[in-house]
Length: 539
Image 1 (cartoon, rainbow, N blue to C red):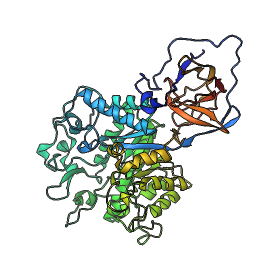
Image 2: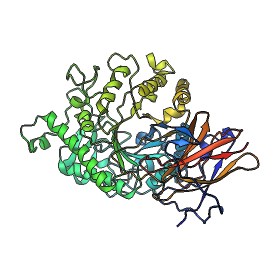
Image 3: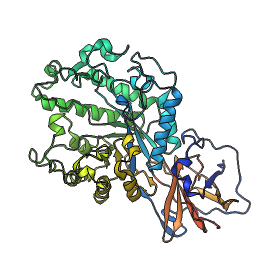
Image 4: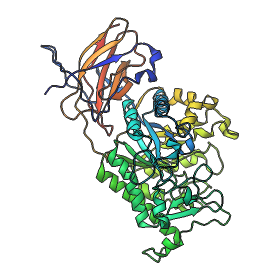
């Protein structure tokens, strides 16, 4: 059966950059079914595509993940405050996605389980008070998760669902702290108080699920996998919170009871705790891939595994060690291949004495070599404007240049609010120098691959007033999940636009003179088809 053509409209006006591409009623690739039917013009032969070339010249496209964290806990980024109307929450979210597109990002990381709660109707957790404004567990009356994913996919942004596995509450007065009487009805720690550990002592206490209890671990895994099973997420994402960071002052994480029940009595408490976290990471990776093999799994850990003064295999740093202090053996997770990507939080300046960016970065770059784990870096946009080197507007710009030097495959910026604030013009600077053109996501060899056949460009013409219209159809074989548009510029064809399958293609700044275009399709894992035959457009 022939596939109908899809019209690609290339808008001339450069002012329609980024944001104007949105709101076209785009559909997710998984459900898109192009309307109508069309036939190729009689007697027109459509040449097959060519891998990596357009009109005889090589194509040029950056392959890197670009994203930002959208933090919901304490309403840090979104929603701007709890209890907003559905319309207001949705409008704010769309604005954040529009910002991401204007930054030429291709992914967003949204906090959907901040503290034992959920941004979806869950059998395992109450509704998040950061959304509903109430700690009563009542539904807001709509499905935020479905909305968030659909809107992200409409803009061709990967949606990574960001979970905190073990946090059960936030400290008072914003959260319930360690007061069981203030938990939402149906909170699982009300039913399973034996799973709960309060830490630290005093007014900053909060509740944690005890990582040392296998039933508690299985429960939090099930809670997160519920979202994976029900929703079209592209990734499952954890940050650096597993066991809590040490508070000092004689505070202990009171897990004596579960430690006493450990199977291997020869284990020290530290080794036992690390094994508990290892098990969570390993099982989540296995269970995600069993459920949906295409869904990515990644973690954004603290930026220091161990210091080389402690362990010769560690980094040339002198800071807190995640291996020893929060029982996160991040090096092991990478070496065992339990992750698809790792995003170390390198929130330190170039030249910082305890953790110099120029010394921490090469350690992580070396760690992923020879593995299938992709390295992205967590960039500390929130620090711009602080005293010292963070007063330099080019600090992150220089860090991104170092990332390129060490073969880093992407960056995630903390957080969305800092991107919008653009302190010292830092964001504007690095966008110009590093994100000036769109980027394709780097493919992952361990994920399912179904690259589509080359699309077929049937006709191209410039309509009155300047827009260019192109008729095209997908090639035979697997449906593309997204497309990439290339324009010949001298000795190369450069990537000028990307989009979800089924969407109109728009070149945000087409040349006024004659131009030549090619189109490719990509599968969900970022594997690209051969390029279509080229089509020229007259001035």
